Amino acid sequence: MTLRAENLTKRYRQGEKEVVALSGFTYAFPPGATAVVGPSGSGKTTLLNLLAGFDLPTEGGVYLGDTPLHALSEDERAGVRLRHMGFVFQQWNLIPTLTALENVAFPLLLAGWPRRARLKRAAELLEKVGLEARLHHLPSRLSGGEQQRVALARALALDPPILFADEPTGNLDLEAREQVANLLFALGEARTLVLVTHDLELAQRAGRILHLKGGRLVREEAPQAKG
Amino acid sequence: MELFLLVLRNLLARPVRSLLTLLGVLVATASMVLFLSFGEGLRRALFQELSRVGPAIQVVPEGAEGFVFGGLPEISPETLKALEEAGRALGVRAVVPTLFLTRGGFDPSTSFLFQGLPEGTPPDLLYPGLKAREGRLIPSEGGAVVGAKVAKRSGLALGSLLRLSPRLALEVEGVLEETGGLADNLIFVPLRVLQEALGTENVTAVLVALSPGQKAEAVARALEEAVPGVKAQTTSEVMRFAERALRISDLVRFGISLVALVVGGLLVANTVMMSVYERVREFGVMRALGARRGFIFRLVLLEALLLALLGGALGLGLGGAASYAINLYTLDQVGLALSAVTPRLGLFALGVALGLGLLAGLLPAYHASRIPVVEALGRV
Ligand SMILES: Nc1ncnc2c1ncn2[C@@H]1O[C@H](COP(=O)(O)OP(=O)(O)OP(=O)(O)O)[C@@H](O)[C@H]1O
Ligand SMILES: [Mg+2]
Image (cartoon, each protein chain N blue to C red):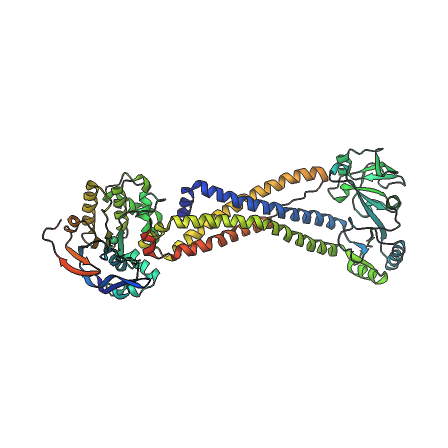
C-alpha cells in the first residue's frame, strides 16, 4: 500500500497575510525509511499532518493506495489511521492515566479486540522494545527513552504498513537516542516509515532524504551507507 | 465497559477533585430526597388513614374542601338539622356533627387535637375497631377519652385533668388501645364542651356513615342537592383533593431543592470541563491513534454521568438515612412517620441525577470531541 502526495499545498490565513506552509509537494513514498529534513518552519510538521489526515490540504491530495485521504470525513480518516498508520511524536505521546501495557493496548481497544488478546499482544510488543519489566508503570514513572519505546510499541500494535515519526528522538540524551533510533529503523524496516527530523545523523540512516525549504521539496537524496 | 474503566482511571487520577464534586452532587440529591420524602410520608400516612375510615362522607362548608381538621366551625345548627333530615330520608346509618380543636404549640407533648362528638356517639362509629384499654370508650359530659399515643406522650392516665380553656378542665375517663391510626393522636370529648369553649353553636364538619350497600357518590350528590351551601366529599374525593394539594407542595419542595441541584450540576460541569481542558493533548493523541469523535464524546459524557450517578446514589442513601432518623423522632413524638423514601422517589432521584450528569456532560463532551486534531496535538 503506497502513500502518495500530489501537489500537496497548505496555506494558512493570518489576518490579511497568507502563510504558505507547504506548496506543491508531490512524492510517492516507497517502502522503507524516508527522512524529511529542513530548517525550522520549512513545513515538515505540516506535511506530516496532511499525510496522516490530521488536517486537510488547501490544494492537492494524499492517496493511500487508491483511497483519497483528503476526500474522507474526519471519522473515516481516523479509521484509516487506526488500520494503516502508526505514530511516534516528539513527546507526550502516552495517555498519562494508563500504564505502559494499557497504552500499547489502546489501539487494539479502538479496533475492538477482546481484553485478553489485547494485553497479550501489548506485552509481546513491549518485550520487543525491551520493556518487559515496565509493563505496569505509568508514563510518569518512565524515562524519556522508555516513553518513546512504549510509543513505538504502541505504533506497531495493529501492525500498520505506514509509520510516522516527528522528531522521535528530539528530547532524548545520546544513549536513549541511539536505542530508540535502532528500534525505529529495525521495526520500521518492512514498512513505509516517514521520519521528520532535524537530526542529520539520524536522517542519514534512512533510505532517502527529502529536503524541504520554504514549504517546497527542493532536493531528494539517497545516502549510500544504510544503517 | 472498557470506556468505563478509562473514565474511572481519569477520575481516580484526581481523587480530591472527584471526591469534592461527588460530595456536591451527594448533598444536592440528599437534600432533594429528604424534601420530597415529606410529601411521600404525608401521602402514605393520609391514605392509610383514609382507607381505614371506610365508606363515609364528610360534609363541609362550600369552598372548604379537603381535610376537616383545620377548618373553622362554619356549619350552623340549621344546616345541621337540614342534613340530618336529608340523611334520614336517604336512609344513611348515622349523621354525626363534629368539631375539631387544636390546643398547644410546637412541643408535641403539650399540643392536643380534640375531636368533639355528640353525646353518646361512640368514637368507633368513625374509627372502626377502636377499643378502650382502660375506662370508658364514650366520654361523659365532663370527661375525655384519649388516644393511646397522646396518653403516652403526655403522660395521661385515668383521672388526669386536661385543661381546655382557663375555665374548663376535663377529666380523663378512658384510654384507648393503640390502633396505629389517626385515632391514637386524638382526644375525644363531647361536642357541646368544645362548642362552649369556642363560644359557637356551629360545627366544623358533619360526617355521614353509610348503610350497607349505599353508594357514597350518589348519597353525597343527593345531600348537596338537598342542603344548599355545603360540599359533601366522599373518601375518594378527599383523596383526590389531598393528592392535588400534595402535588403542589411537592412541586414547591422540588423547586427549593432545584437550587441545590443546579449547583451540583454546575459543579459536575465545571469539573468535567476542567478535566477536558487539561486533557486536550491526550484527546489529540487518541484521535491521532484512530479514535473517532464519538469515542471522545462518550468518554467525557460518561465521566459526567458517572460522577452524577454515583453522587446521586450516595445522596439517595444519605437522604434515606436522614428520613429514617426523622421518622424515629416523629414516630415517637406524634406517632406518624412523616417522611418516606418510596421506590418511586428513589427512582426519581436517580433519574434527576442522571439528567443532571447528562446536562452537565453534554457541553464539555461536545467541546472535547470537536477540537481539531492538529490543534490538540500542538498543545501540551
Ligand atoms: N496553524 C497555523 N497557522 C498559521 N501558520 C502556521 C500554522 N501552522 C504552521 N504555520 C506556519 O507554517 C510554516 C510551516 O510550519 P511547520 O510547523 O510545518 O514547520 P516545521 O518544518 O515543522 O518547523 P519545526 O522544525 O520548527 O518544527 C511556518 O511558517 C509556520 O509558522
Ligand atoms: Mg515541526
